Length: 223
Image (cartoon, rainbow, N blue to C red; front, side, top):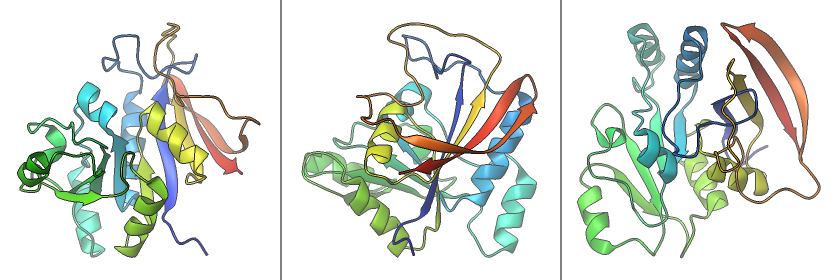
């Protein structure tokens, strides 16, 4: 039995595997049909996690858009939106980030490197917890989430966080939507950034389907 949440990645990428261009600005990749799928997936999750890079570049809210899905969660004894988690080793998150609104609970996972004054300020808007001395200990964070009742964890990026979690064998599935575009760019961020895996991590294809103008794929991670 896992002593951590069942963890799945959800990401939209171009056909060439890019999630943005060199400027790292948000690019529309998903179709209308995929946006609806993602909303349902968020409703299924107990928590949604991103890295600080995603917050700075995209400023997401990570909330469920469908009122019907939020109401269904409440009827099932859950909060209207999943817990939002930001992996932020130095607490670089801007105080005006959408993820710090009062639409859902937010957990800032940081380290001992975080400034005490920043911790105090941000603790007024979110729960701030320390996991490690210099870099967020993802295994420790995962166990913490499991202990507070998180059974299904959705990871929405970015590529550096996904790389780190794969390296720690913390991801069970990859949900990837390939939009009908090519972005290109040698330094454009990809689904999994960082150093390569040796040997490569193998996957098992669980499902694929045409969705809007793109293709949705679901993979099991084989460690």
